[in-house]
Length: 193
Image (tube, rainbow, N blue to C red; front, side, top):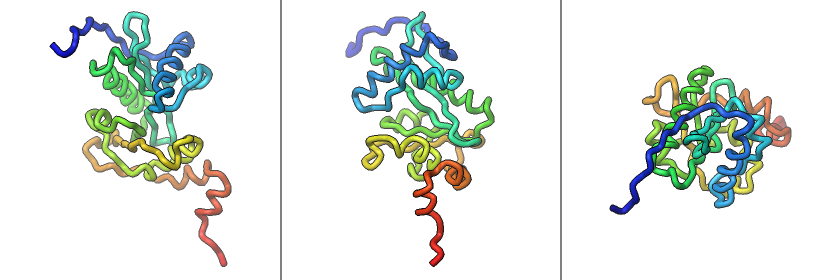
């Protein structure tokens, strides 16, 4: 057999407590060190306490993910990480399923993700979209990323109202008017010569 037998796992996907923040930050940091995702400090995790879910295997955090609202209709899955010894066991899919349930509970219409693993998200029902269609994401966090001008992540989108529908990102210009830096707004505004 190419793989050793898998130990029986009793994974529970649950909300997080303040006590989970160090384990989440450490798990994410391992992938951030490999340049696979952005790090999350314990303080950042605590600020998003209601938005995180973890995969708990008998008290050990073996996976995590968060659902961050970008607009009233669009949220992003962030910090999706699974411990290396738990890969290919469905843990990531369970976390995404829980986060999508949370998005539906909150009345969101769409969920996006930027990923280096598009096939994983396609198996969860997401479709590849042009990253510029996710304008709220770009202006809220991407512009601060060191990889912004050479981003290697794939933009993915899932319509919760009709998952089979072709992706049609929600209008973004209202968000941009409220959140873009002034130089960007001047650049986008029509010139009046």
